[in-house]
Length: 171
View 1 (cartoon, helix red, strand yellow):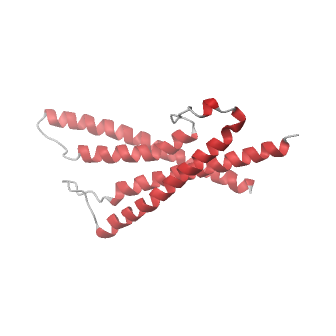
View 2: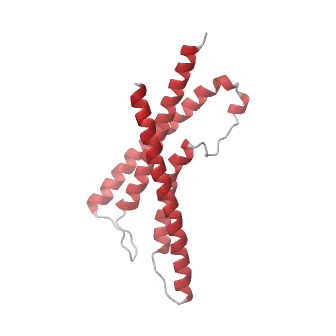
View 3: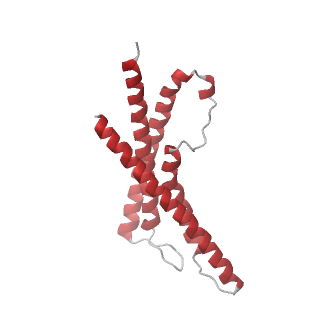
């Protein structure tokens, strides 16, 4: 059981690092595209796709970067409740928030998956000059949803395992 959990935890961490790396590459891409657009517009030209592609990049970057930030404890936490509860009772609240949030992301991703499949099967493209297949950015966001779901499930299991290990070693 612990071996399977350790594998899932390592896999989640690896995938989160890949997602974070892609998010960083997207930030660099956005900087480059914006700089190119500034240069081109100063010459009276344009790529005509900056708004669209920067929008896609922001959405993808957000969803692929979020799991890594969660894993590292970098998300903003509202400590309104935790500050008023003794430390030994934090784990049930952490577990509850992880399970509820994972459930929400999994549920939303099921609908998003249908949307991606529909966009792909119908050949939906953007209404811009680029005519980007919409399933591409939607699919990248879906992968981010799955990564955050996996990270939250691993986090919930870790809370339960650490709590049960603590109880087993208690006098």
